[in-house]
Length: 266
Image 1 (cartoon, helix red, strand yellow):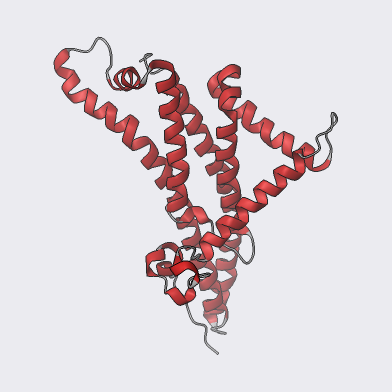
Image 2 (cartoon, rainbow, N blue to C red; image 1 turned 30 degrees about the vertical axis):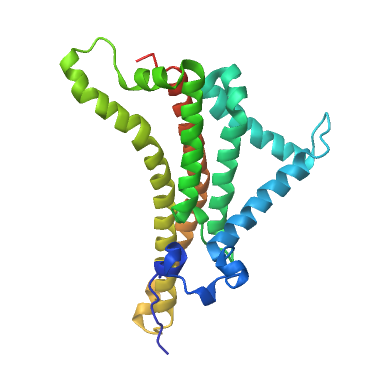
């Protein structure tokens, strides 16, 4: 009996334009306008889960929290204290907490899908969701600066560094503009996608190798023990990355808002 090694197939999962219409859900409804693939269904499922959990936690709040309300309050307090207020201060932290918390929990719950049996993939591994989250972060960053300074002054304050020799502005202004208004959202999206796409590929490779080596039923079978241990270790590492990426995304959102609020302080 021989094992077969199955390499990861990214075509259908992560590049939806390559999916055959017969493999889409609701592909025949309304000429395919509402067609969904597996990753889209996972996004909807995880969105419903986070909405239901927080609705259950806060639908009937008590003065002394317990159970799911206690979990929900501690989770929100973590974002409030360790991200929003830590970066923005109490006043601005409270003001921007709803959007920062929404981004944190959206990223977190989408990431959790990667270690749920039967799902085994994060919707953030496809670039669409990271782009949406980065766009939200970007819009809030622009809004924060434009609200305080006006759009023109905000952009000027963000890209023009005071007290530089005039000739250097020809070099510095394009660099600052690219760094502030293009690179920030792009790196937010790519960092999130790349981490979970890479993690998914590594896990598939390790557990495919385990299956392959085990069923050789010869000297190679011993290697299946090593690959399964590496796969489990990688799964534990993915659990850390799940939280870490949500924290980093929300933290950078708060940092970018803070930089916009103080765009004139170079």
